[in-house]
Every structure is written in C-alpha cells, then in structure tokens.
Image (cartoon, rainbow, N blue to C red; front, side, top):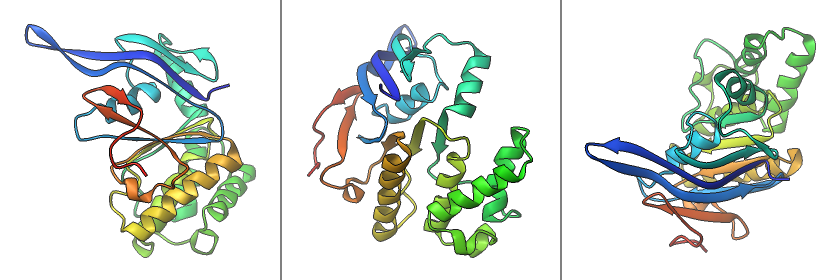
Length: 229
C-alpha cells in the first residue's frame, strides 16, 4: 500500500483576472521502502508538491492519500495529528538550536509531544547511532560539520516513527561527497524503516543509477527528466 499517493492533483492561485497553476494534474505514489526523487527548475512546483504531500496545502483539485486513506479534505486537527504522527520533515537547512546538543534536539521533539520518558531518550540515542552520530550526540551544532548537522535533522524527523519522510533539498549546503553520503543515508533508512521517502533535489549527481526520479516542469510531471543517468 502506498505511503503517499497524489492522484491528479492540481493547485492554482488567482492571478489578476486569471489563474496561475503551480501543479497540473500531478499523479505519483511513494511506496514503503521507496525513495523517489523529484527534480526541476526553480518555479516548477516542487515546493508546492511537498506542501501538498505534507498536508500544509489543500489542492484545488485531485486526491491526496496517506496509507490508503483519503486525507484531501481533512480538517485542521486531523492534518496536525497526521503531520505529528505519520509525516517527518527534513528541511534544506536543519535549523538546530545552538544551545542544545544533538541529543537534546531530538529529546525536545518528544517533550513537545508530552513524552518525557526514558524510552523517548533511548529512542533518540538509537536514532543518532543509526545516522552515524553516536560519538558526537552530546555536542552542540557549532561543534558539528554541515553534514553532521543535516544528519541530526534527519534523526529528528524520525523521532515520531513516520510512515512518510519529506525531504527538501538536503544537499544544497553540502559539498558533493557529503551530499552523496546524505542521500545514501536516506536511501538506507528508507529501506530499513520501510519509509516512503520523497526527496526534492536539484543535485542529480548525488543520486544512484537505481533511484526513481521524476521531474516537474511548469507544474507538470515529466517521467524522464533531463540529466538522469
């Protein structure tokens, strides 16, 4: 069953006397254990696609499903609960709090959800081990490299054990080697945790030959974007 499915999704905005289309009848699905990369030029609709998939934006037309459930018209509380329980977000920059250690960044997520148990702290430690930061979990962001900070952001996104992971340009601030390592990590976590992972990226060079890739051009889906190996 797909972790996330968009069926004929359209998003349009009023522009004077007419309409501007951000997405035009976009259909795609991300299955558990699958990493799907979406590429395209600026203004092509990638950010809008992530917003719809993350239940931050209601489409003008079409259907959005999460784990087979139609959530297109879900109310605000349901959307908030789904984002908390079923969706993890990894941002272009991790936006870590400078005063907190890597471990504390994750524990804070659990505390915001009302969980102050030792189990949540152990879960945070296990996640940091899983992303390769076990030896530096007690360091603050200023003592971590850019790649390590992004790994903290990935681990933080997994604190709620989501079904779907939405990743926005995770390598844009990294050099090629660290960028490849981050995408490799996302691919491994996707398989191990049976996530549906949707990655928006400009950097096709960090992808592997076997990765699924689609493109967006002027809000329309392109199944074989230029530059894909």
